[in-house]
Image 1 (cartoon, rainbow, N blue to C red):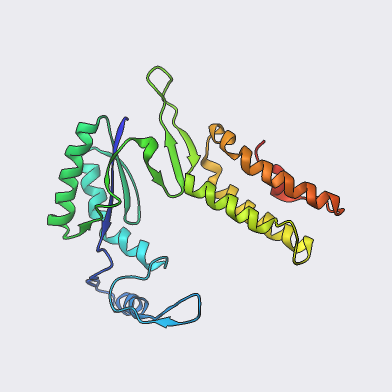
Image 2 (image 1 turned 90 degrees about the horizontal axis):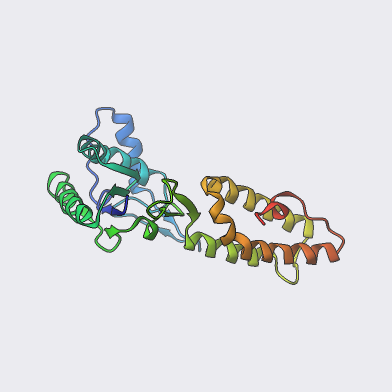
Length: 234
């Protein structure tokens, strides 16, 4: 597994055609599609086309529409993984990746009448692909078949930024409240990234060092940290 064809289909929610027999489902989906979106500042924005990004309806409709793509990839015997409209197809060489990329693009655009997001699609090596917050490192020849799994660079940057914001030099509120927030956040983070392999530990050492500095500040103030803050990989 040396090269992968990474594709993302767009347009799935841009012109949604409802063709289900159950009128209750049609009514529910139509209401969700036409509901106003509330922005962070409280402003309501009317949706005229497409599905609201980040909402539960977008991946549901993607899974319904792209089930045909899953069946086609399975019929061809290809190794692939897909979540909503984000799909990765794994092949043995760059040449095969280019061939599959061309073929699947034609299938999506001609057969399914979907538009491929060219900016996010391409033929890449697996270690250059970030998928659902993860990145991968394939073993070199002779090193076995185990693939190392890491948090993506974006996920690590977001974790650092969040911890910096949650462990400021001057706490503006109850330390106990801050520690509860940190524990909840790290519990959720580690639950999501539990799939990472031991190789990911080295990349977390900088984050761990920052957390330890936060611990030291708390200990100086007579607070003993508990929960996941003191259980980060070291």
